[in-house]
Image 1: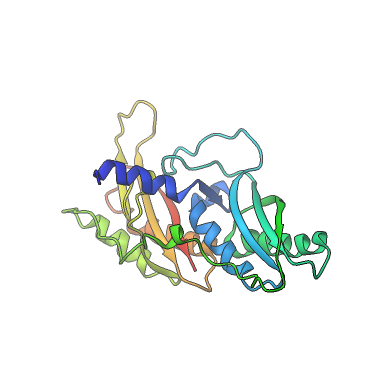
Image 2: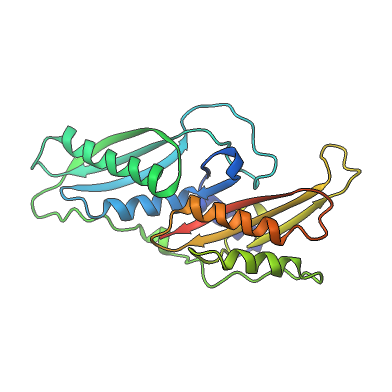
Length: 249
C-alpha cells in the first residue's frame, strides 16, 4: 500500500482529536482511544450491549488551537452518541440510564473529557440466550500500535531527551507510532524571530499510549511538564508542548 494512502487511512481510523481538560492543558485524545476505553468500562454491565459510539463537539464554534496537532478540536464540551441493545428484564429507560451514567463518568472522570450530553438510541432487544458482552470490534484491534516509536534522527539529541522525559512519566507505556496530524512519536518545530505570524518559540508534540489504571488527562499533564523542561535548552523562545493520547487502558 502506498505510504501516503496508508497514513491517511490510519488518521481517518483514529477519528477526531478530542480535547482533554482545558485549553491550558494543550492535550488531546483520539476518538478511537476514547471509544475503546468506553467499551471496556461498559463490558461488565448486565443486560445491555453497547453498539456504535461516536464523540464530537456538542457545540459549534471555537478556534482551532494554534499549537495543537493538525485537526485538533478546540477545548469545548463533547457529546457522546451511542446505540445499544438491552434485555427485557428491566424497563428500557432504566437500562439506558445505567449505560448513560457509565459512559458519562468514564469520559469525564476516567479520561478527562468534558461531556455535556450522552444521547442513546435503542437498536434492539436481547433474547435470554444472547450474552450481553461488549467485544471490541475487530477493526479496532486489526492494527496494533506496536512497540515504542523510534525517535527521529536528531544530531542535537533534543528529540531523544524529549522522548526520555515522556517515557519516565508514570502511566506512559510507550510513544505512539500512529501518525496523528502528520506527526510522529516526537515532533519538534522552532519558530524564528522573524516569523511573520508568530512569536519566536518552540513547539513540541508528543504522542503517547497510557497504561491501565492511569487517567489520560493527568498523565498528559505530567508528560507536558516533563517534556517542556527537557525541550527548553536552546529554544528560541517559550516552549509549548502538545500531548496526544492515542491509546489508553
